[in-house]
Image (tube, rainbow, N blue to C red; front, top):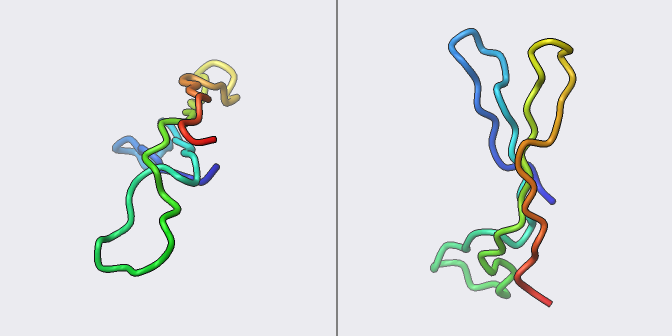
Length: 67
């Protein structure tokens, strides 16, 4: 897994963080390297609970597309 993106509110507080599969996405066409990205949809997202300030998993998609 690799870190995807962080979404922040106006105050600069993190609203949620997304973690993605290493193989999600595509390479630039101009790079002449081995194909390591395959558009894998696996990801999970975490959010803080307002009452307790603890993080919880809000989205969990763990089905990998590659063998």
